[in-house]
Length: 250
Length: 250
Image (cartoon, rainbow over all chains, first blue to last red; front, side, top):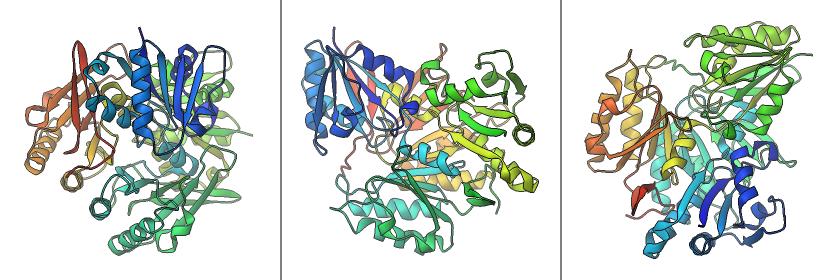
């Protein structure tokens, strides 16, 4: 009897991969995913690795469902958490539109450390109070929806975590996002640019909202914008701590 | 030289505890936390466990900082992720108000699988698109702020994850929250009640928003409310899958 597990490998550091996912990988016959995530899986006899390119999520999902229905033990890998802007939703989109037989497959989602939690931890606790999480890519939704969510989130005084803030094919969106935030927030709350978190290439940059520029972000950057309540603690010879208190002070 | 690590132990299942946190626990001299989380730490010679009651977060934080300054290797444990409605913000509140010497302490935050990710994974991918995360407790913020955030989040059409939806000392808040959501959303989007996720006592209950009642939640329940886009896939002899597609369909 085959199965399909959609798993999160965390942001990159192997000590952030859960034992649950490690055990699943040890039992799999097939691992399917985007090339750089497949490269993180240890090869062994009997394990087939199926790497594919970006932007073919639905093809990858269908392939995984077909193999599982045939009786294979299939893992679909995502970085971070599979349920946050990653492969789990893509697999369920394919499942819903696919043949009835796919609904008989045993499917599990195994959570992982998503990028915003890893990034937040590196600077303190900027998501320590209410927050929202927005994918800034307009590949799959109209820009107007993103703009509306940014405005309402700023009015609600949420901290915000942005996935996919900027890419070569979408150079303008993040600039517009910063303009909207500045126009609604009107303050110097901290913005965190956390690139390649937990990898050897990690860089962390904290700037006031008024000084944030589009060039500070790329596709490997997680952006976290504080709420009006977010605070910075300066320390001698150490990087500052950015955190949002649990209480709300008017 | 002492240090302080504020770590997340995940929602309960030990296979969701990261190796990073396991390694830190193996090096610690002192572990500080709420009794039920301390009970999850394996005892060993040379390790002192300091359990304390709920609602003494600041005292616990100060104790941890004092011990680390004395040269101890101190871990503060939270369930889930320490940066999401947990101990990291409390430690930084204490640090900011405390003696200057505390700012010289080496402090790290080690992320964990927070309850909303574990709960989402158990039903599919309800947080697969933009979402917000709100602590429904009004112990540390006025109820008006919560109400405003609920209304704006519903207008923004976010999926929503609610921590601390209801307790014996706050029986009314969640009832008001459901009333607000019904009045703004006016539909039957799914609401997920995930209790004691990843523990032997786990229960998962999915109901339409119009049929959600306050009694379905307690302090061990994570509540996830879908967006207008959230879908349910029915399966023969299997629990339904709840997911929010990556794309936005008007």
